[in-house]
Image 1: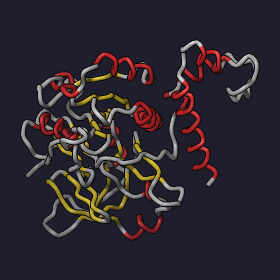
Image 2 (image 1 turned 180 degrees about the vertical axis):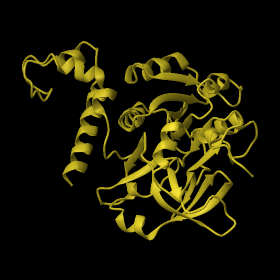
Image 3 (image 1 turned 60 degrees about the horizontal axis):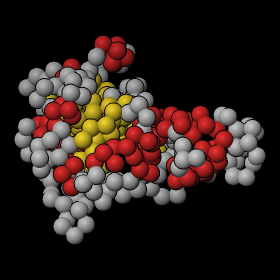
Length: 326
């Protein structure tokens, strides 16, 4: 079965880059299971593994293929066994977090993402500090973040929550939806375009798979209802996977993250308000504690800036500095 890879995001720039690899075929990674990958090429889906040379030259986790990557493989179909991945093409965006363990390494969440849906439910999961973390890695990854607030039927003070979100995400689109009320999914659909890749991130059980099922028009991904005692959803996605939508758009579903540790990020973009206020401080190296002429302390006193947001900024600064030095 012939596959039009344009539907999966193939464009002229990627074609030109792939043309330098004579005798190899282009494909996109759709799933990853430890050392085994699922890819889609011009003749359909195949299982694949990396070549010995690629594995030998990989100095870190991010040097291995990840879901969303465009890769060069040794065959165009699965008639003769698993494909071998020889090269990863240049990534236009790379969404990462700190890998588990003590090593200072990056774990790739997804590659070549155009839009990042940061999903958070309007119940017990609602957490402004978590949004700041996701925005920090989104801006750093060269993707466009969109905040998706789910389960609006469980929220009795929606406008209050929206005001809180806008205070930490100036200029970022916010979409509100509810699967119970079938509300907001038309707004989500406006971001889906042919060849555009949208990745979904968020805590377990916030409704990522439910939204993707709506976009697909059928229940392909497993979902489970929220737990009655705490309003939290129960996690079902176990691995990252890239899925083609009926209209040609592409989504990447990711497992829920209990904790998002940051190894690199764009704090200046996420905390533009803090940086702008701090630029007016009397001293360039102001610690925003007891120095005279500190505009940040004045902003906190007059309510322009919250102490919690400043502390979040400091915490992420320390986290990223530690990763750089470790």
